[in-house]
Length: 297
Image (cartoon, rainbow, N blue to C red; front, side, top):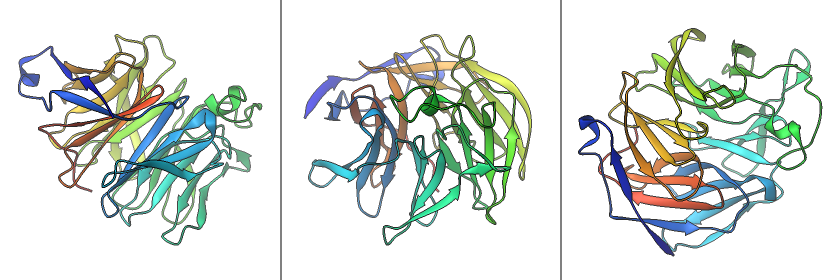
C-alpha cells in the first residue's frame, strides 16, 4: 500500500481547520480510469468502477484486498447506495440505470425516455422520497473506449429523475455535459457539474419536489474540469478536479483544496464514522482519514 503526502491548501480562513491524516493511502492502482466510489457500511467495503476495463472492483476494509465485484459490468460509471443498502449504478455501455438487489439480481430502473435510449448515464443520487436523479452525458457513446460508440437517440444531454413509481422525467435540459450531482443537506438545493462548459462549472438549483428552478453558476473550475460532487456534513461542497478536490463554502467561495497526484474523478465518504474520504483518480483509489464527515443518509 503506497503512502502519499496529504496537502490541504487553505484559500480562505473557513478552511483553516479542515484537515486529516498526514498521509493518504493509495489502496489500489493499475486501472485505466477509476470512477463511482460507493461505500457499504454493513459490509465495510468500497466498490468502484474501472470504466475502460469494463469492471467494477471491490476493496475490503477489513483485509485491504481488492477483487472483482462485477465483470463485465456494462461499463459502469457512477454509483450510489440507496436507503435500503442496495447498489444503484449508471451503466454507460448498457445506457441504463440499474439496481443490484440484496440477492444479487439486477433491476432496471430506467433505460429509455419516451421510447428513446439514454446516451450513457453518468452519475446518480437518491432523494429522501426514494426518487433517483441522474445525469446523462454522451461519454459512453462518443467512442468505444468506455462504452459503445453510437448516435444519440435523444439528441441532447439532460438530467433526469426516476419517480418511485418508475416514471421518468427531464428535470434540466440546458446542459452541455452534465456530470456529478449532489443534494444539499436539507435537499432544498441540487448541485450539478457541467464538465464541458468553458470554464467547467457547478450550477445550483432550487428543489421543489420533482421540479428544479434557478440553475445559476455556483462555482467555476480553475484546474481542468469538474467531475464528481459531494456535500459534507457541514454543508460544504466538494468537487473532483484535475489537481485534486476543491472545497466550496455554501456561498460558492472556493475555500480550499486537497491536492491529489492524479486527475480526480469522484469521491465519497465511508468508514464507521463517515470520516474516511475515498477518492477515485486516474488509475488509482486513495483514502484519507479526515476531521470532517459525510452526511447521514
